[in-house]
Length: 368
Image (cartoon, rainbow, N blue to C red; front, side):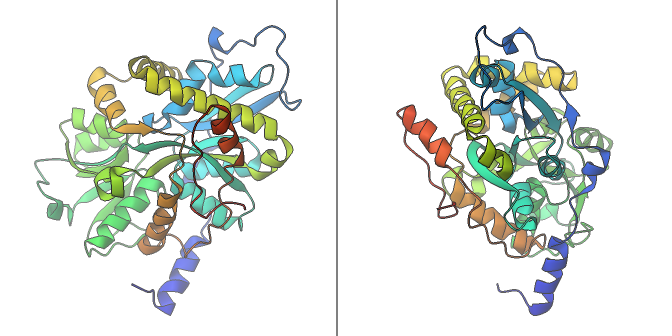
């Protein structure tokens, strides 16, 4: 339905809001030194003359490529004598600020922060250069309080952060059911509680929220606490596929260091190939990296169902990004964005062709 002039003005104001609160706490957690898997091979050379490449990702299984590629030393192998350095984040807006500030060069991130960052910079700060994952997002509820989708009305539902990918998805879904929610405050026919994934299970256990629209492994953690999966977001998408994790790069870094970007993308493609061939070993590797980053591994009753719900892919599923941008505008979190040029899949497609693989599409949102 077309927006009224007043609504368009409101969306434009909301879209102009600064990136959100996590940035106030710093750009992310610097990761610990890596194990012997990360050691540089004798005689290895620096890529593009760089001492290091700074890589960001979240401690979510939806970022499995980054977790596994790091733990197995695959990024370091491709980068040679250029050190792979890492920072972990809890949500997308803080990672975008880190990219803008040069604190990271390349990052694994959800689609909504990538869209928001790109549009707020006038298309000048980042490019999406590859895909990583689809799926792995669920609405999990307290079955004593919510037994059907209509019961969600009037309840308190958590999302990870204002404007993050799951926040946009839930607000769009609620709007589709005819419920009114103020996107900024979260108040309305449903109360949206913005809650860090780390504390959402405690909030669920205490009863301060009635459910959550969250990525894995948080969704499976809630199920382990007695929650019930009321809706798998993949069921809302054609073919049950939608982008949940992209790879982004600073445009300055891409222009100056294309060989380093290619090395990281080769590592990503190689990691995804290994995940497909060795899913159980890859799952264990991801869990070891989660433990190294957070100090705590996931138990089997959380890890196993979470891992099964995620599809790892090199394809950025670009057509679904445009749809997610429409969802953000519909939810009142973004003015209608111009995403032309957000993708540059040139290097990824070269890597895929070199591996004898089919190339992937930018759905008309590329640089050419």
